[in-house]
Image 1 (spheres, rainbow, N blue to C red):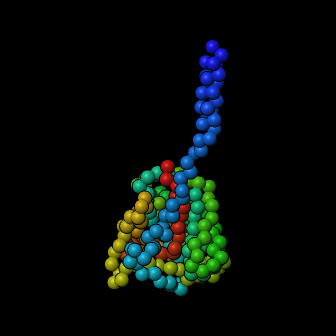
Image 2 (cartoon, rainbow, N blue to C red):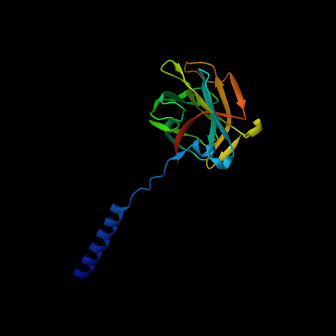
Image 3 (cartoon, rainbow, N blue to C red):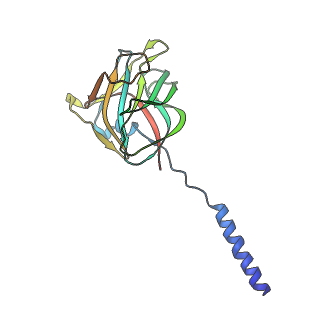
Length: 193
C-alpha cells in the first residue's frame, strides 16, 4: 500500500512538473511588404523628390493574425507618419510616427496589436512630408512599366497601390488601382494566428 501511494505521488508530481515546463510557442513576426522588394522578384527601385503625398499599399493576408508594428523605409532619415486603414470603410485603424534614423534602413514602431481578418483588404500608408519638408520617397516597378500586382509572397498579397497629394492624414484614394508600382516604402509586422 505504501509503495502504491509513493508511486502515485511520483506520477502526479511528474505530471505537474511536465505541465510547468511547457512553454507556449511564440509565433515569429513576419514582414508584410519587405519580402516583395527582394531581387528575386525583379523589381527596379528608384526615388522621386516630389510631394507631399500620402502613398498607400493595399494588401490582404491569407490567414488571420495580428499586426503589431508599422514601419518605414525611406531614402532620408526623418520621423514619418505611417497609418493602417480598412480599405472598404476607409476607417483609420492605427497610426504611428516612425523615427527612421538612417537612410534606406527600415525602422518600426510598436502599435497596439490589431487583429486582422483573412482575405479582407487593408491599406498601409505613409506621408512623404516630415517636419513640414517634402522628402524623397521610393518606388518599385518592373522594367517597361508592366503590371505586376496583385502579387503574393507567403501569407501576404499586395493588390494595388494608391496615393493622394496631401500633407494631411486622409485616405489616399485620389489615384487608385495602380498595378505597376509600389510607393513608400511602408511595412508592417504580422503574427499569424
